Image (cartoon, rainbow, N blue to C red; front, side, top):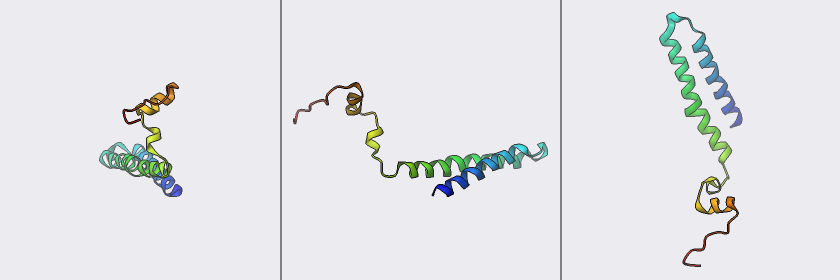
Length: 83
């Protein structure tokens, strides 16, 4: 997975760089290369990277809930009516 993400990222940056180096007479083609590279970065590489890095982690630990705010402030957890 790591190598696939790396290949996609390098290809996307290469496409963007190639789009910027094309002559002014090929404006439409250069826009297509730049757009394809940008789309590959944000629609392929980024979601794959986020999936790879977040696998096996609890998302609740990273959310800003009232319980987590109280932990950061050093306050005891709030008691509910059931306890």
